[in-house]
Length: 118
Image (cartoon, rainbow, N blue to C red; front, side):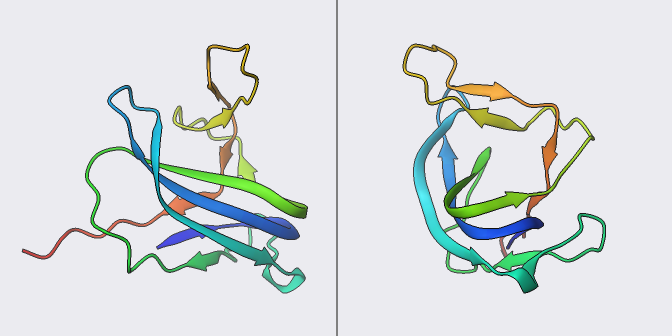
């Protein structure tokens, strides 16, 4: 299950990627589009999350990357000042050898994991 807190309406694309050997985003495993409506919005502190069910996704192991991309309107996702050390902004400049730039703000996106039944 993936949850996120939205501040403004619009359309977002959420992609979950497997990791490469160098621990960078690899092949896209799941891609979904979500319309964020006015009634979905949060003030960032009210506990209101938008939920995407990923029950049909194949089991994963290791590092997982979650990408959120604005594709319509002006959607925004809340962030907090807690430094996670694991949040990045993709740099699309082909002249820049660093494709991922660390950010000090942690987006309010949560990926809930469940252990495999044995």
